[in-house]
Image 1: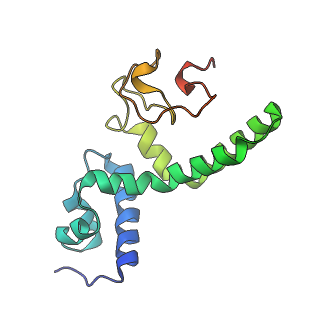
Image 2: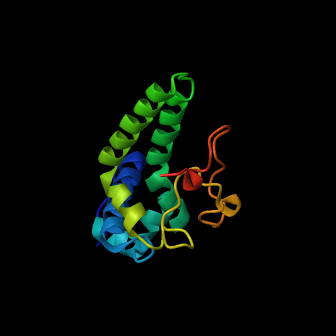
Image 3: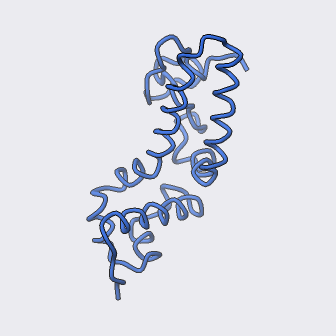
Length: 153
């Protein structure tokens, strides 16, 4: 029998936390909405009430990381000194990875999340215009910033 659910925000947050845990355990593509509902002890309809599709759920799971990265880039962009800018970006990226280590494990370890090349595309990858990964476009690179795939490492 399904457990009673709390307020909309609480239910949504419980689903996101549970989905991320199952994505980390099983992979994104191997985790069904039914498994998420079962782990929560609710009906699958409860999950669908919060997220119309699995893709919408996945997008909501990664949104905090995308927001954090956007904030980091916005913070670093006006810095004129390149060394200081790099330091801000590196510290921010490390914080994002540490604070979102469960999501990092999912995005780097799940072949379903990786691009057609079998590896995850960096945020900002130019996609089909990128000579390195030649994959479908994700997000356009920020103005004045090269595609991270083609940056010499």
